[in-house]
Length: 410
Image (tube, rainbow, N blue to C red; front, side, top):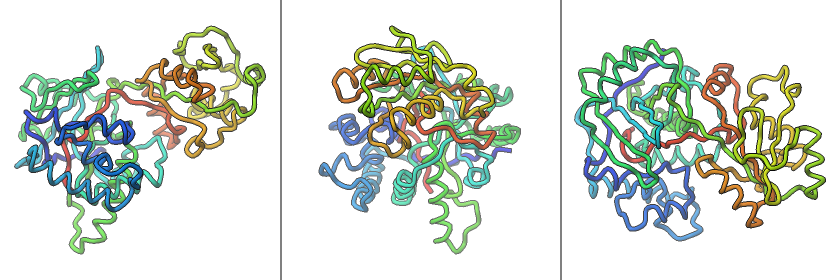
C-alpha cells in the first residue's frame, strides 16, 4: 500500500515560472549550468548549482557552496517571489516532448516506505552524491527537485487525472529544449480521494532520482536526531515525488565511450570481440532491437549481436544489453572493471543522439563508442521486484522534470 500526502509547495508566481524553472541539477556540468543561467538572476540553477557564481575550481562540496545555495534560495524567495501555498495540495505535472506526453501526480511520499522497500529501487547510490544532496537539503531545509517515480497503471487514478486536465493550468510554458511543462493545482476537495486511490497501489518504483530519495532518508535521520519531540508527522518524514503510470514512461539508452583500446589494435580488437559477439560492418548507429549493440570505431559503425545461447539461464539483470556489454566486452577486453570509478569511460544520455558519439571518437578524445537499445519499463519493474540492481548508467529518462517549479519545505 503506497502512502502519499499533499504538501504546501513553495513555488514561483505563474508569470515568473519560466524564468525560475531549470533543468535538474545533475544533468549538466558546472560550465553548462553557468551558461544556461546566463544573466538571469531568477534561474533556479543558482540554488541547485550555486558554484556557478563562485570562482572556477572551488570545491563544490564545501560549506561555502552550500551556504551560497541557502542564501540564493532566500534571495530568490523574495525576488521572484516564491510563495508558500496556504493549504497542502497535490498537483498534476504534464511533460510533452514531440508526440510523447506523460502526466503524473506531484505528491509527497513516505521516507518510511522508502526505507522499508514499499518504494522499490533499481540502482545503487554513490556516497559522494548522497552527501551532496543531503547537505543541500539540510542547508535549505527544502527538497527542490522531485523524485521521478512510476507505478503500474490504475484505472481509478487515470480517471481522476484525466478529469483534472480539463481545468486551467497553474503553469504552462515551453523550455529552451522544446519540452512543454504544464502543471495544475488539484482542488483540496480531491485530496482524500487521491490518497484512497493510491492505497490500492501495492508498490511504487523509483525511475529517476535515487540519490534524491536516499538523501531525503539521510536528511530525515539528521533532523529526527535533532528533534526531541519527533512524532513522525513532520515534513522531513516525506519527500517530493512525481508519480507517472508505467505505460507513459519514456526510457532512452545510456550510451558509452572509452578513451583507448586497452593496447589492442583495431583489427585485434575486432578479433577479440568476435569471440563473444557476431559482428556486422556498416551497421545502423541505433540498434534495431534488444540483443544488438552498435559500436563506432575508426569512423565506422559495427553491429554487435549477442549470441542467444549466451543469455540462457541468466537472471534478468544479467540479460540486459548493458550487462552483456559490460561483462563480455568492456571488462574482459577493454579493461573497464568498475564503470563508477574508471576515468577511461564516459556516459552519454540517449537524448544527445549518436552524432555525439561520433564526435567524441572523430575528434580523438575517445577511441570507441557504443550505442545501446534502451531498457524497457517492464524490465525495470521486474528487476526492482526481484530486489536486483541494474548496472550503473542503464537508463536515461526523457523528458526531464524541472527543478524549482515546486519545492517541499522540510
